[in-house]
Length: 475
Ligand code: 5AD
Ligand code: SF4
Image 1 (cartoon, rainbow, N blue to C red):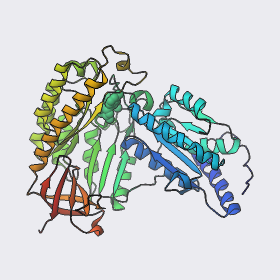
Image 2 (tube, protein in one colour; image 1 turned 120 degrees about the vertical axis):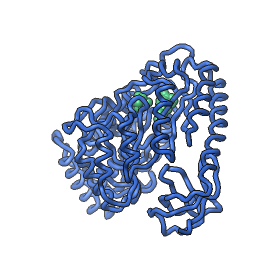
Image 3 (cartoon, rainbow, N blue to C red; image 1 turned 30 degrees about the vertical axis):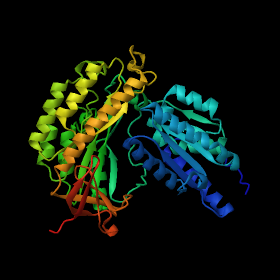
Image 4 (cartoon, protein in one colour; image 1 turned 60 degrees about the vertical axis):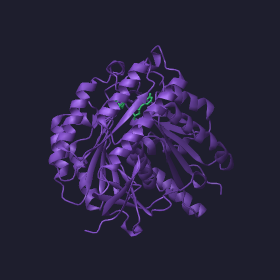
């Protein structure tokens, strides 16, 4: 049905006004056409992006959109992009490329892009030129402007490009449509000040901004009251939480206070920077009731020379001290890490130092990445980029080593009974149920799908490098 275009909007002052105007427009459309418009949000990248997408979906709902399960059913598509490696950028661009035919079939379809990739000027330019059917983009710091930009496009049909990663104040009170009814993300800070030499994040997410503690605690309280069982506090570097806040708390203070909230839940956090993961934080964790004995502590490299070039500002020695203290205070702690293979100038000797650290650290799991040069970062300009074949061989050697360690670590759990948060039906053929331990390890067992969202006690009977098998415990 042909619908008349809304009045060209005067300058929209705030998110609430734009949300109201879009809602009126969508209600009018629903009245005239007999169907409600629907939005589809696609997410690439990390948990921070997943958390942002839940806010985008929440704002879309507040503007009167239903939520579509597939892009073909949508009147509005928002692609939330990642820039941390080239692969993620290529996937986002090729996905948007596929939407061209949807736009041809339905010229009223609105396509927006946001997130880290589009916060880079050169990518924003590329989208402007090569993807003319993308109607508007907004950078990471402009999440709350989504309704304003959507209204601007809807009322003027002029493409809107707001790429910048400027540091706007943290927006409180945005609606959130959570994907899961018992696991939740809570963003506590945005941006990063560390400028690791390989990393694009500080350029696309801007400087660190922390939320005040009270709204964070209030969000956790309401999640616990609503029955959420697993709550993850999110930030690029949670250990430096609190700078610039009125309350002046640090991350350990925030955790200690959050832990006082009564209820049956587990609290976790990511990501930590080894240079800032201090004893105070570890002591708070060890003494807590609700904080999971789990720590993601990205090592990146086991060579001090490479760590220096990465601008990580710790050494393998200080890293090991932190690890030892963690295990001394919490012998059952699960420790995971990130490793980059093939950083510029990484020699065979450097790589072997990483293998040695892997043996020493005995991580439960690692996330390993092949170094990807990011335009605008210092490492992309460094000499001695490692050839792809060398990097790939090293990557395989690293994985082979970690697989052995992961299996050994998981085998140690056989015979133990663990509290596991059940995720319901599994994709594993023989075992019907999957869930996650307090250490965030994946477990499969034969059980009841009705336990989804509940804590159950599972006796571990088998181990693989990346997962455990078990059976319902009898106690
Ligand atoms: N190339 C490869 N891996 C990277 N990471 C960040 N930037 C890059 C890059 N340019 C990895 C780091 C980080 C994780 C989230 O992604 O290991 O901890
Ligand atoms: Fe990137 Fe380093 Fe900041 Fe992590 S701490 S987001 S790796 S710059």
